[in-house]
Length: 309
Length: 290
Image 1 (cartoon, helix red, strand yellow):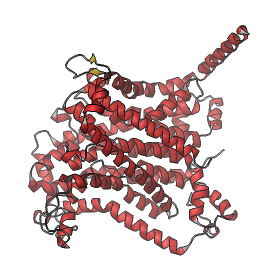
Image 2 (tube, chains in turn yellow, blue):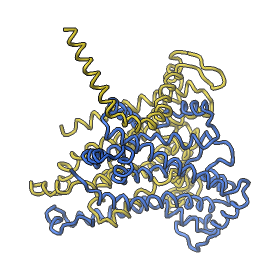
Image 3 (cartoon, helix red, strand yellow):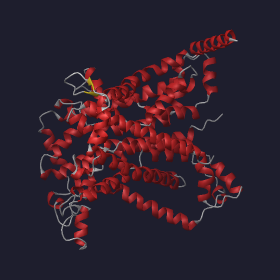
């Protein structure tokens, strides 16, 4: 009995070795990438978890302090809780809306002629073209009467004095969300456009024969189910993006923003990492964010896999 | 191959005309909203100084002038570090990063897509897992690693980490799985073609849309790279930083600032326009199914 089990493992091992030998060129092809991947993606994650249990300020060697960073984060850091709340609100709104907007627009575009479609894809994609395009929103919502929104509101007599949009904690988050939604037709949108273009139209024709009456039925019964892989992929991208919001917040609302209204987990992380050099604490924040992103993503992929089954 | 439009096909699918009109209007409005800031930036960059500060502010320019651009070149020519140096920095970072990313990810994608060696699945799953979080999570330890490597204040931290783009690898690998039939690779192997030749001559041309997409994404990222916490020396700073330093120098430079925005947009827009048409063209002709 034991002997045969041993034999089974031995033949298995032998087969694996044979396969590795036959396909060994594959290792050479992936080696350069995987090496860099280990250094710049895998190692940082591991290091981050490691330093999160230490006190480390770069100048002195790190020393182990156990769960202290985490307990401080959750029990003693009010600003972190504000940042967490802001990030969750931001992600809950921009994630789904941006995602559906990308899909719906790509879907509406796919029926147009090539030339018109190319022009529209280009126009829709403009905001994502440059990472600094959102600075224009700072101008729109500028607090003096030269700000575009203020001047329009003043002109129509809706307000009497200019509103300090980006200095008012009530307005900061909505403006950041608006600007992000405007920028949300990015990679996901391109993915949808490309995959809808490559979509096999004979499926739709077959559907028409089978009694699909309008394009909404087409979408629901034919297009969506066959696009599950792309839907999954873009959902993953959206989650990762939504939770790592920082540049847009700190550039529009400043850092720190008024009452921390535009403070997110990542700005909190950069505050401790790049400004205060409390690397251990920053790593604890990063680890929490990492766990948050991964678990939301796992939940979402589970959910999308269930759809239509 | 022209667009696959068979005359009676559109009759087969049920399309209502009213809805079509509605969709056109809707798309037009969205397009206006999306492109408004760029139109606004271009218009602002052409405004003379007195128009920039009129009340109420106007969207479109009344008396267009090239003054802002001329002023910009004037300021540029007086800058302490020769301006060509900033331009070189950005062009170099963008080109090196993009080329590296395409080469490294396509090599790895070929390895994972067409070789069934033990561990290939595991590596790919690791890559997919890493797409679930962004590099901001690892910003701090990455800094520690790069400083240990002695790369701070060089071009390297802005370029080399881009070579291992999980997203890039994923996109190319998925495209390869779908568009490069295994039988083609087998046939080439039987003909005695070495692996690298197969990769270069057969696989790469077939996955052109995938790496063109990668180029679009990569150029956008790198062209606006600011150097972040890694660059201190003035002569290594990228164009964005230099131009923004100039633009924020004084209030009278708000016109220049708009000109800067427009100039920095030229390259991403150009790359996007050039590759977009080719992506579509390649998509139409790469119809090889087994």
